Image (cartoon, rainbow, N blue to C red):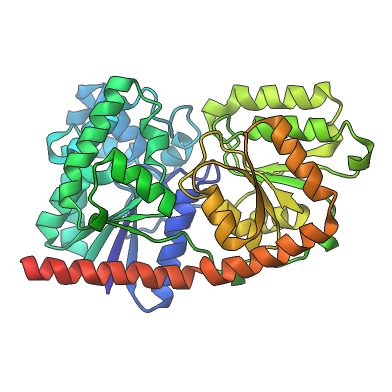
Length: 435
């Protein structure tokens, strides 16, 4: 099967679960002898740009489309201007901009992107579709998320193939907009859903969320969990590690890093946790600068500079080094998440997770058996959950082993990729019957 994945990138400035999820699926599908191409949008997926190639450009370059949206004069700029703005050095720089990965202030562009051939980015859409028509012959096209639905009509019509669309954390982007803008976006996404053969939700929880928000019929949504390859991770029982607490995600207020830091400060007030350190990783954007400055100030005020490590490298070997350092991980996302691939990476490495009862976290922990769920997402509740777990080495060891087995059984990327292929095959069959 010839599959094309269209994936918006983060530029590698922070731990991007969506980029990681899509790339792992691409690798697994390629191992199964499918022909798969990644088509990056906006920015490269990763810091080292290994997702880029000379043959496949980054479409909808982040700087170019931003300037064209705000300043109409750029829409008539010569081609060399676009090429300069979309060069690797410029895109790498763009990934560090404040606001480059948030919705606030980008409401008009979000709506315009969803309008597709009727939006301000219609020329970019035309370039992308023309390039795919000239260079590829896909059997199916897979959009990374529903914010890309403005592409679906032209892609399906010009290439005469079904379009599949993943669902993951669109609400995180849309629901922070002004209420009037958010309402317009949800309505547009619901309308554009007509051009999609099937939606793939990353969890049962999020399937329910998006069926309601986008008015999607039950039959149009197929949950397929995120997966990882356990062979990519080194299992190390927690009893062989120091009792360090970890955090691995974008270092931001929304992801609740301050909740964990405050919980850690509470723990360190008790003598029995003198040996426990906190290791934080995941990167950030310009928007997180003040937040991180406040976090560092709080750590200094409590005299814990030597007990808190900011682990800089969170990709590939850097992540493996990080996972060696921690015995338990918590990412107390304020509103929960559609999934959270970092949980699988930790459990595959033998690290129990401690998560709030929000989003898909209870679903993941229940299936894997590799963690603890606490109720109210406050520093006090998290500190209590961490204290109880860190004080029970037998339970830590049990969760360490059970979590590893749970990932092998329920979240293996090869199993999930097979389910994805089944969705593709049914969509192709249905599409050909309608043609």
